[in-house]
Length: 224
Image (tube, rainbow, N blue to C red):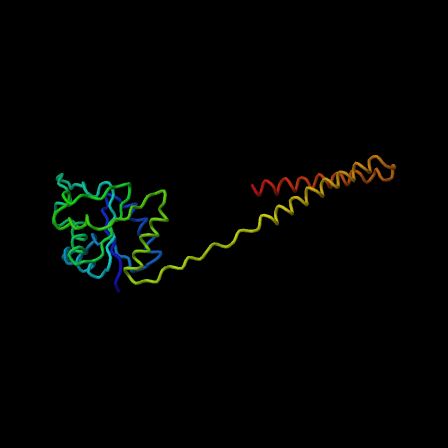
């Protein structure tokens, strides 16, 4: 089954690649492949990468600040090594005319052709998607939409969130509580100035008004 190959460099943008992978897996599931650098002992590294890339119809290469200038233990730029796994992944996809989508993170600029080995130079002609932290969801959706078209996958149907409870109903209820509280206090005041028999009921109406007011205040705090 054709899928998506995610290429990234661990010492460059592994965290960003992980976030991209999570979002793509949520949409495409097992059609996403990554971490081919963990090849089993005895297997040909180049053949394994070619096999994995060949089984995909799109390669997403995550490019961060260190992607271009990452060096090995000898201080040599990794991309200059013909056996570098990132170079092999991208070069294989370009050679096989697979859709290659550069994904720029950390405000990284697209490399120049003069900065890349000859087999990676065509990468600079691929239109890139810039994924910013401040608009991650929007940019990821653009990437997903592109991959849906490449894979021939029907666009994902987004279920709208449930409507929020009507605020008008809550406001009407709170206003009713306030009016009831004021009414009870007015009754208590009226009874306090009437006959001795009626005056005995005034404290009850007053306390009822206080209780209603306390309930109203607590609901107001809960809403805010």
